Amino acid sequence: MRKVASLVTKIIFLLICYWFITRVVIPSMKNIFVSKQITIDQTPILIKEIKSIGQLITYTSFDEVVADTTIKTKGSAFVNGFNRFTPVPILPSADKQLVIIGRGKILVGTDLTRLSDSGVTIKNDTVRVQLPKAQILDAILNPSDFETFVEKGEWSNDEVIRVKAQARRKMIEHALNQHILTKADAKAKIVMENFLHNIGYKHVEVF
Image (tube, rainbow, N blue to C red; front, side, top):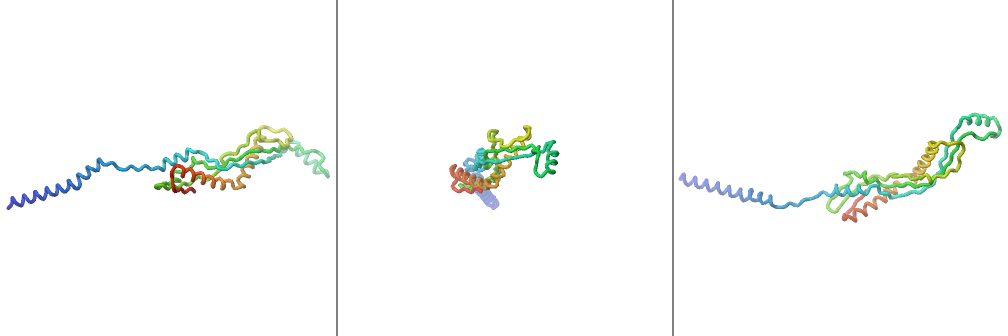
């Protein structure tokens, strides 16, 4: 009787071992040799491609501005004081005066190197991109773009540079008053949408 019970126990143990080996061990061993599908995250690659474009110029504004400066000299106080006591100014003003005309262009666009890593998300064939805001990329006024309209008195090179800088600031201010940043943002969105469609994305959201 004991021999029979022992035999049954051994048989049950062998059956359990067989089940464990066939259901757990062997399938696990098979999985070692089965190639798994590798999914590559395309987001860093796309971010690198967009940043490589660099500065995307989407709007150019041409303008002509006038900048003028008057500086009092040592003789200005005497001349101005004397003229105050006369019905009409008798002595010519001793102030220095410089009036220049500047012609140039403002380049506006998007600096794509400022694209943040969180600004791009990809899911299957859909991509969403949040572009950096448009900005003034450059204000170009070459030395040949300036014309002296009035020059009274002697002016140092530093003083002339300051007047030219005033012309540059005026040109930028005029451009901003024309809402060119909004226009540049809209153009950058269109350009980026076309770019993403051309490289294979079916659904594109740019904002």
